[in-house]
Structure formats: structure tokens, C-alpha cells
Image (cartoon, rainbow, N blue to C red; front, side, top):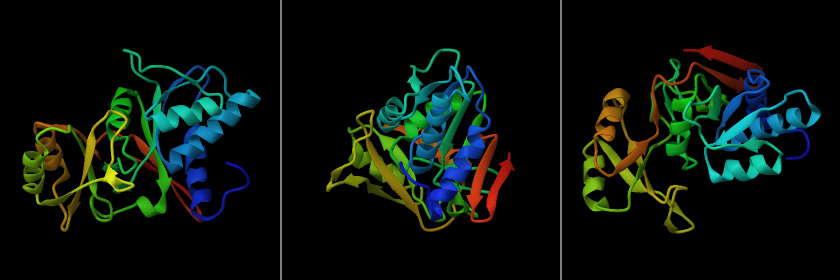
Amino acid sequence: MTGKPTGMEAMKQAAALRALALVEDGMLLGLGTGSTARWLLEGLGAKLRDGTLKNVTGVATSRQTEERAAALGIGLAELPAGGLDLAIDGMDEVTADLQVIKGLGGALTREKIVAAAAKRFVLIGDESKRVGHLGERAPLPVEVVNFGTKRLVRLLADLGAEPRLRLADGAPFVTDNGNLVYDLHFSTPFDATRTAELLADMPGVVEHGLFLGMAERAFIASRTGVDEVVA
């Protein structure tokens, strides 16, 4: 990325830089995926190059993030058994109490693995991500294995949603894990906790995009500044 960002991109950068201030020398850091997390990578790479930060190693949540981190000179590692010091990632929807939908970029499973492995999980995003209830604007992504999907779609519909197979260039979207994604569209508010429980028990579901009770704080940027919301 070159030049000074404007508009929405400037807000994304502002949120990312606030979270970047939490990163310390020697940390093992979970690196998120998406347009806001990309600004985190840019800022981290710059700080490592100028020596402001030293010996920070990243664990990427997607191949896209791996490639960008490598290009910026950010060292990468596999997720260790002992977990991570900190993970920073974007969100697609966030409520006032930091309940979150993630996964519109298709990396929800790796994102959740990394977030759950971190001692601290921090969200970054712009004000357009704020919602009164989950599902207000974004669908709920669900990663599934490519077997028995006709039956699984029926079970997903029984949750009160319309399941739509995610496509890319007219073909089924395939995750980095080799799976499919169904986006659940709810026409009315749903019980996120109960939905998460039902999805977790549903054979064929690999992971869902409900990140409930996981984040300790969020940095949410607007045109007037960055709000820090603590769980």
C-alpha cells in the first residue's frame, strides 16, 4: 500500500495502529485476515524494519496473510502448543458487548483457532461494523465439509436462516482448508449463544463465524477518532 489512506481506509488504518501499540518486543502474535488486518501488517512491517519493534513473530490466519506478511519481512511460525501472546483481527459485525461475526473473508476456522490460542484477543474495525444485534447486516458464515451437504443445508435452514452456498467467480468458494462455506441469512434477530451451540453439535460443520465472549477489547474507528471498547 502506498500513499496516505483516506475515507474508510483511513479509519481502518487508525484502528489497526491503535491495536499495534499493544505489541511488544519478543511477542508471538496472531495476525488476522482482511482489509483492516492488512493495515496491521503494514504497520507491523514498518516497525520491524525501523527497529521500533524487535523479534516479533507472527502466526497467520490465512494464506493471504502469510503471503503479505512474508512480503513485508514479518517472520512467521506455526501455532505452538503453548499458544500466543496476542491476536489482532478484524470483524464483520460487533455488538456493544463485543459479540462478533467473522468470516466473510473465508478464514473463520483459522481465525478462531488463533483467537482461542491467544492470551489476549483484540478486534479492529471501522464504525460500519457496529450493530444492535448479530446478523443485522452480515450473514453468519459456516464452514462445512463437502459431503452430505444436502442434508446439512436442511439442518442449517432449521435454525431459521436461509443458507446460501458461497461462490467465487461462479464456482463454489473453497477455504484454505479445502472446505465449503454456507452463509446463513437471518431475517430476524436470533439467539447467538444457542445458535453457536447447535452449530457446534451439527455433524459436517467444521466451524462457524460466531466469536462469542472471546475478545477483551475492540478499537473501532470513526471520522472523529478511535473508540476503545472493553468487554
